[in-house]
Length: 373
Ligand SMILES: Nc1ncnc2c1ncn2[C@@H]1O[C@H](COP(=O)(O)OP(=O)(O)OP(=O)(O)O)[C@@H](O)[C@H]1O
Ligand SMILES: [Mg+2]
Image (cartoon, rainbow, N blue to C red):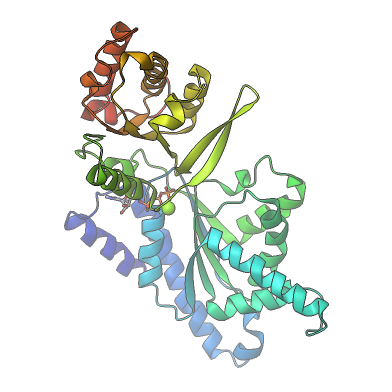
């Protein structure tokens, strides 16, 4: 298996589908080793006369926990492994959906219990049994814990899963030590972190390249005029950057107020011009956005008449903030940058914005890393 996986990766590199990446190779090798261990484990279980009754007595191999920044290839490598690995009983799930499913199962069990249908009050063991039936190799994409209800259930659930011989593979943007950081009652969560580290090898996949962003290279980032086809282009870029149709709403705290972000995912925020420039927002808000997101999608910038001086001023401040933090801007507008605000107060300052809007479309700008100097 080890060789099969590495060979497969090298073929993808040779055919030009993937760029050679030493960090990815290293993770691929670990996946290969895990694949071999899983095959051996499966065989040992089959040989064991007790297999069907006491299979967990033969300790399953440790899983893998791959963490790193966005776009490094974590999901891609896990999926390569998942499809190639010769294990019959496997499931690959998005962690968020998995937890939703767990909560509804726990809820069902509790309800059945309170109505006297099922004996035994603890819902965790039967829920763990249900999960194991769907696959002993559990591959989680985007492991994260932000919610106290998840945090409180995970320790007991994973104890039950590991007791049943489950092997867990996960991708995450966080090292286990920083999961649920700052969360309520975090001390109760720490044993779960220790268990993860005991049952999974923790590896970082954090090369310099965000491949998702890199794939944008050469893609136009400023779309005009407005209309259905522009909206579709922007939606296409959004999906490529975030692997999702829609993002989650978020709110950022700015000077004791909350700034609403209509959609966000994977370090990308999506606003309309109206969301940011037609409301009483200022530099502090824009800096917060610039600080928190490596890419901003700004849709439907209109042509601004002289009476729109406040909107124009906010737009200048917004672009300055994004520019200073080297945030990537993907925009749709009614006109080219130099035709957005042709006349009115502050057109002199606006000239700098126009120049920046052009520069922000260039390859050298797009290649800069996120953040202030
Ligand atoms: N070595 C590579 N060469 C070319 N493209 C790559 C390479 N590695 C990954 N990619 C591509 O980059 C994109 C991002 O990869 P992937 O989704 O696996 O990242 P990720 O680490 O899971 O990111 P996130 O943390 O945001 O979920 C995918 O389209 C993937 O196919
Ligand atoms: Mg991923």
